[in-house]
Each structure stands twice: as C-alpha cells, then as structure tokens.
Length: 336
Image 1 (cartoon, rainbow, N blue to C red):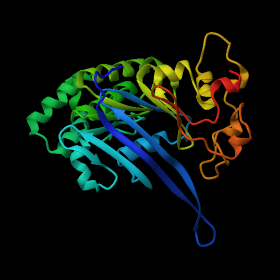
Image 2: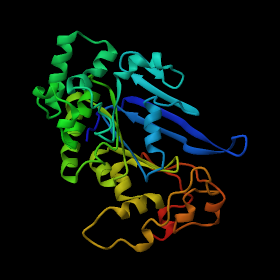
Image 3: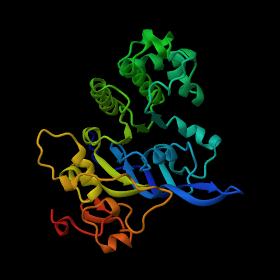
C-alpha cells in the first residue's frame, strides 16, 4: 500500500444519490424508488487505495459507475481535482465535456471475458483509449502499447492476437493495460479478481500494487471479498443498502470493527480457528432497496438492535481518528 507523505485530495464525493423508479399498474405509474446509492460521501487522496466493500446489492458498483459518469446521479456532487485544471465538478458535464477527462479516470472491469471485444486485436483494444484521446501518431501508439503490455506482464508480440487466445488472467492483464495506457490519475477497479481462479487472483493483485508504485496511481477498489480489501486498501468504506455504515483506515476497521454489519462481514472470512461466536455471523438477506425497513436498515439482522434502531436511522459519526460509524451504540454497550 502507498502511504502519501502529504495528503492531496484527488476525488471528493458529497451526498451522492442514485434512485431508480419502480413502475407498475395499468398506466405504468411510478409507485416507488429503488435507492441504489443514498447519500454517499467520501474523500479519496492521491496515492491511496480506497475500498468500497459490502454484499451484492449494497450499491458499491453503482457508486463506481457514477464516478465514471457511465450514468448520471439523481443528486449529489463528484469533484475531481485534476493536476492541471484544478477542481472539476463532474456531474453537470456532458459526454463531450467529459471526453478530455476520460484519459485521467479509467476503469478495470470485473469480467475479463465480456469486457474485451472479441473482434478486436490486443493492439486495437489497448490502443483504443489513446485513439479516443487523440494523443500521438501511429508509431507512438504502438510504442506506448508495447510498453504497457510489457509492464502488465504480457509480451508485445501478442499485439496482433485476439482475446480468445488468452486465459482469464491474461485477459485481465489486457484490461489493466488498456486502463493504464493513458497514464490516468484515478483507476476505478470494479471487482477485478472476483471472476478469476484463486491461483491467479494473487498475481493480479500483486500486479496492481506494482503498477500503482510505478505510475503513482490512485485506486478506488470495489470488492465483496474482505481478504482482498485488506490486502489492497489503505482506507475503506463499508456499504449497506446504498449507504456507508462504517469508514476509516483498513487497519482500524479490521482490528476494531464498530458496526455490527462490518463485524458480520469479518466473521465470514475463512479462519483456521473456530472462535467466532455464532451470534456475530450475518443472518438473513440484504434489505430490499425498494422497500426499506424503518430506522436503521440493518436492524432486522442486527443482534444488538434496540427500539431506537427501529425508528431512527443513525448518522455517520466520528469515533476515532479518521474512523466513522453509523450506529446508535458503541461497542462496549453491545456487550462485546
């Protein structure tokens, strides 16, 4: 992990919301909302790997797509602090206005099979961001592509081959090379190893770390696997049904989880011992974002829930240095 000597802000997300209408009835009227992302705020500093973690359906991938401007949020702000242009508010920008920033904010996708066009050669795939940004001539493109392929652990001799000739791990290396060929400032990595064999996952994670050092990258790392998050991330936010329930330095959260949901996620990590108490394990399924429970969304699954949890949603509050939690109670009051 990279520890910046001085904190320089790269991305600031404030009260980000993404609501999808639920339609039905004879006239197909809107009868409700799915709150996929609901008031998410965080800061991402240069040289840091910031993780978003939670169960499927918690809103972490939607948050990443909103930052990439794949979709426009219902409300909120996303400010990117560009090295050359200074702070830029991304939400109001059109696709045309976003184009110069695409080379500075890139994405590594989850599925290395569906994210690569089977009709394009590796040279065309990796060089696509360069052509879109209009940087350099054909020879310059080839040199840059060859260089980034080599740094990604692939031979430049592979440039004329097609994706079907490569394994899943090699395809993900191609996807990483495509993301880094424009030398971006921010890389959004959406579950980059979840579809790979366990034996290959460690190789890709180590590669991402090496490239972060080489290119001075900042990662927004999205994953559901806390073992991966712990290995990769300096800081992290735990999400549950569209909201952040705990946020802080990875070391603090893994050693001293403050939210019952975080505690439940940690109890799922495979261990050699069986000391984990059964009541700490997650029970039941994630809440329905179109029909949310009253109060704290987690209270139907929480072993420590009290009456206040059923009526009031807790605010995200400071409990230590750079450590925040959205829970009405402190750990010592939960009998831990």
